[in-house]
Image 1: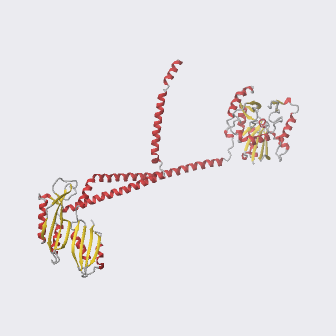
Image 2 (image 1 turned 180 degrees about the horizontal axis):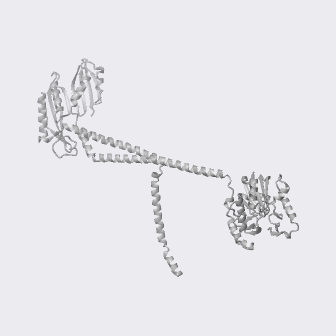
Image 3 (image 1 turned 30 degrees about the vertical axis):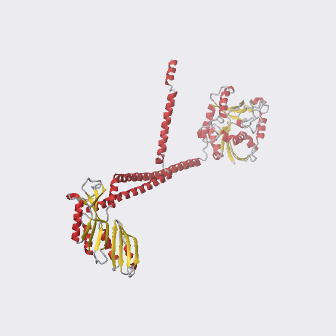
Length: 205
Length: 411
């Protein structure tokens, strides 16, 4: 009977390797516990130094937020400006070619203002971004002060608008009275009806 | 100066002494006595003496006197640590006590503890029957007195009367304490073996000495009390330690509670200080944690907003570039007319424009003025829309001036 009990007791003995494994497991768990404890210590028991650090971090983040907000506002402002400006853009909704339209419109405005078109170059098309192009033409007109002013006024008021990329006003000659020569590069902005780009929704069509 | 209250119990009376000791000098303060009889039992007499003596105010209160069936003997023991010595005595005592140690309480004293040259410990053991001790402590409890300990007179004989045989009939009428023999140990000898016990008693009393302000007769009467007082003045605090068998155990209720109010006040103050410290720390923690939480919440909110802003800008990065590019290629729509309208009222009346040249947002103007415009051009740069980059004038031969103006149109 005693032998049996001894045998049973022997069987219950934990082998040394298992003991080491248990010890390792316990140490790992204890290590994790300590690591978690150390990690959370500052949150549970913050010090003035920790608080100051966090306040500095907050200040830095606020500065960054201010910078990013300014960038967003600038973008929104640009989008609004472009949206407003796009009211003066050319859109090929009426199936006319832009270059033909530009030439016809310029001649029409010049005629209406009473200035003489001395020269008008070919229209040059240039893509700015996807969906938006510019058309440019070199033009030279001649007229008195009143006619020139009317020409300039009608150009800026027309829809779509003509922009002066470059403008040069000067008297026609030393003894020509108030006759002025206006020459420069006129520009028309808009869409040629191609594939709309990411600004399609911004443009006022 | 320390005051000692010594109460000696005898079969027929209780004696009390209040003494004071400072720098080795003893002074007598008070004596009290009460008879023990069937009308006035021991507990009552103890109470009376204790009260009259005002022993409660003493720095040390010791009981001494006779106990039925109590005794002393001496033996040598090897040098051992005190707990081991107690265990060794426990083992050794049955050889000295005829009835064994069952039902017997004992304590010991090492007489040559400080003598490093001694080969062995000279140990004096005091024993008493447990029943007698319980009866005695019961009487003490009933009397309501307090005491720091009990000193059996024969235990206190050394070192005051180291070489003197001592007979104390009040403590033990049948035996006397012999002088150390050839083996250096004292033995309890029967009085019958002594020729003149009264002479022994008188000699011991003479050898002990007593306070100068004490009557010799009183000193002789209080011989045991004086012995106990001198003993506790040296060993009292030491023997008050319990648990190493150097004192018989007294019920806890018998120990005097000195400075109780002060102790309670100290404990209360300590607890109050602890509570205050806890509250203060808690408050500090709550305050700090509150502020930390607020900052954390703000950080989370700012981070959330920052993520939104960054996401928005990331999603619209291409659009932003395109918009910038398009806007950069949009010149001022009616810049020419606006600039002319702006300049007209700010220029002198006798001025004529000879050239207007605009490239993007930059405008170069050449004007001719019949006379010196002087300060008339100062107003040209008063608008935020235009920035004057250059303004200069040249005088001609005919007294007229050419004015050169370069402006930038601000968006």
